[in-house]
Image (cartoon, rainbow, N blue to C red; front, top):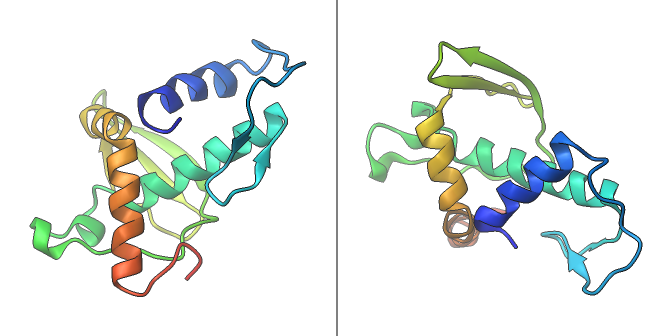
Amino acid sequence: MIAAPLATFYRLFCMNPTVLTLTHFDAAMVDLDGTLVDTLGDFVAAVNAMLAELLRVESPSAEVQGHSPSQKTIVGGKRNVTITAVEPVGHYAIRLVFDDGHDTGLYSWTWLHELATRQDELWRAYLAALEARGLSRDR
């Protein structure tokens, strides 16, 4: 349920939360830490939390990406990071401001599309990199 369908669900539920009323579950869904997602509010919160964390740890800033792939910084401890502001940058990008003070990445529409289409792959790589460095999503 991660990858491209997540972006579709995000648009469907977060942009118009009255679109669907859940009255019957044919399947159980859990968020990334294994917690049961059993209400629309839980679903929206799980999606928002996961998107904010992924957007933060994959920030296009030099602080995170470095100036070459070998310089990429693996950022741990961002499980609960939130986006506090979204600022337009011309017609080509947005600047996201996170509650941890990070605000230097310009997220172009191309970069956001890349994150959306490779979300599952990037998330798995991120979790593996955290483990390899002895880091976690909490520290």
